[in-house]
Image 1: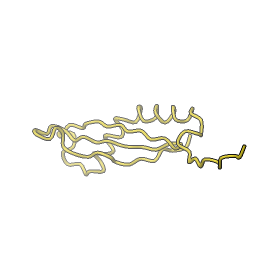
Image 2 (image 1 turned 45 degrees about the horizontal axis):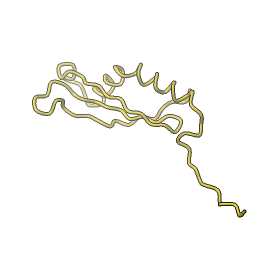
Image 3 (image 1 turned 180 degrees about the vertical axis):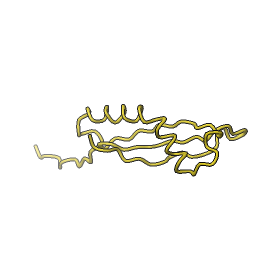
Length: 92
């Protein structure tokens, strides 16, 4: 299975009014399809960690769901998400 490409799409204190955690979300692309998953990491678990380490914790928490989504993408045909150029209309 090819490896999905990931982007950190969310990284902020949550909830905004009285934060108790970091919200971390990942968008990922695999075989021309995109998906998004996010989670929260308690602030106590973030203490003393870098942003990258917090992202690593969040990814590990989401790994099972991301792998399941990537496996679903593997079973889909190649046409979804492919570039398409319509053919010229034929003369009748």
